[in-house]
Length: 42
Image (cartoon, rainbow, N blue to C red; front, side, top):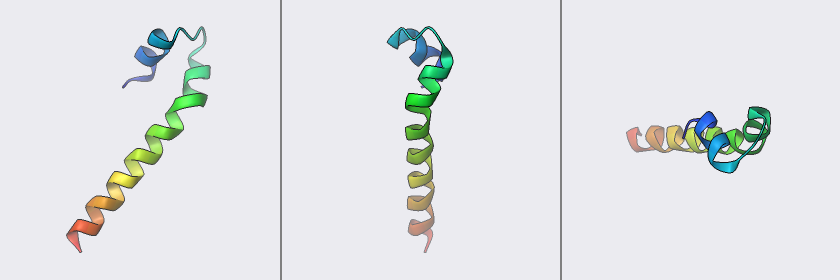
């Protein structure tokens, strides 16, 4: 989900709050997906 949409849904006044709380989780999920793809190739 795009951070700006999430900010609106959660009612955060500042996008920085949303980014600090939730974006790192998204980054980790993407990295795990990348690892899974690499392992399937091997």
